[in-house]
Length: 294
Image 1 (tube, rainbow, N blue to C red):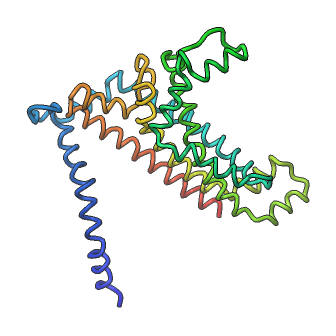
Image 2 (tube, helix red, strand yellow):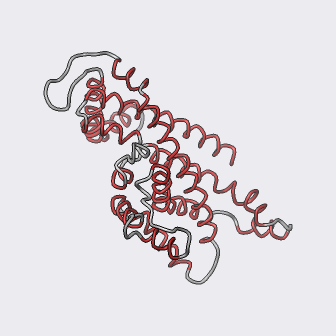
Image 3 (tube, rainbow, N blue to C red):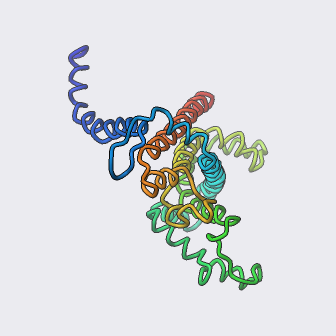
């Protein structure tokens, strides 16, 4: 059987899933959109209609603009570091050496750790009184005294980027390593016979086979980094002096700390729109990359 009957049956089979999606995603989204056009507080009255005032205030706010820059900087630097380290680690683990299977298993551990646990571990490492980083740097003579890495605006963001990179580069490694397994051995052997060096073999032989999966990893990590909340909230709560405050933390503060539900909802929708545009742009880039790879 085919035709309209099968189409109707398919929709009927998907109906429970669609109902759950509407209840879990659709209705809260509609409610948030409606709330964003009001001056409602988190507790109390529902608020009155204010139109696009919340959006205009947020987009023109210096806090929003600084936070957008901070978020973009965090996403760009951390994702770039994760991609570079992840690919290098995948190239290493793709080689044949004794114990590589154990090393591959250990590679998953940072990524498998819950983000809150990872953030807490790094807070202990950066601790200004008994942190392992201060102890190591003073013992080898790099520092004369302990520093508060998360308490200084000049170092807090770098410390967060290091922690986030350590947590997430294994994901890039696993994706790149899986792609490397698909590179034909005869092509690599032919390039080696032709006298191609390591960089040339990677650039002209290996990279075309793994660029598609790498683009997928780039999309996933960029979106996650752009809406990061948990690791920064646990380690610095957006401080010091808002130097590590990201858009997600700004949404939380606006809606829950300041209890401005209406403006918090508008800010959340602005962030959602930015992430959606970013995801759509990357989707087009991935499609073009996959087409050129063929």
